[in-house]
Image: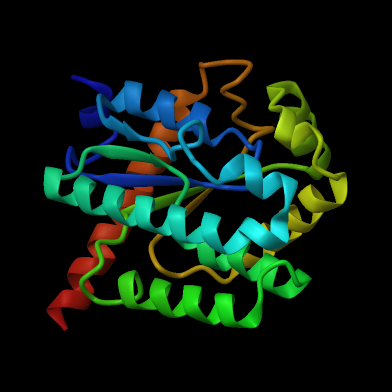
Length: 227
């Protein structure tokens, strides 16, 4: 019996990993996909034509960056569901508008006109009955000090040169965002309890939680459809 069968995880599941920068989304994505024999879906950082420019000038490039991410994630989400599921996805499409675009609008690094254009586009593409939402969103959380330490350890120059205040602002916004998120079922994982960067052993404990969450959410969906 493989781990997917052991923990009753359907082979067409779509699991999305969410959380602030540096929390370990990529590590969790790889570990879960390997354990479940699922495919992975990663955001395109190295080939992103706006990312480095954005870190140099938030105000000029925030709108361009958000539209790029929205288009890429929408295409990826469509591909995943056309394939038939069986994916673990690094970062959700919902974070783009709920965290990043809103933060830049609030801080004045995205103009009101650009923000309205972006949110209208997001709503038209994503907030419809036709958009395929994930079966489960795994939210990774930890202390702010842990997050900053991981960002520094990762060593990306454009992140290391970003003021700590930016990461703190993002951290706080994520905390508020997840408390109000309802687009799909959520499983919260604390990186202090299940630190896959230091120890691979917790993966089966995580899979057990994933299996229970998916079974619960699918039973709830069936009840809703039966009404």
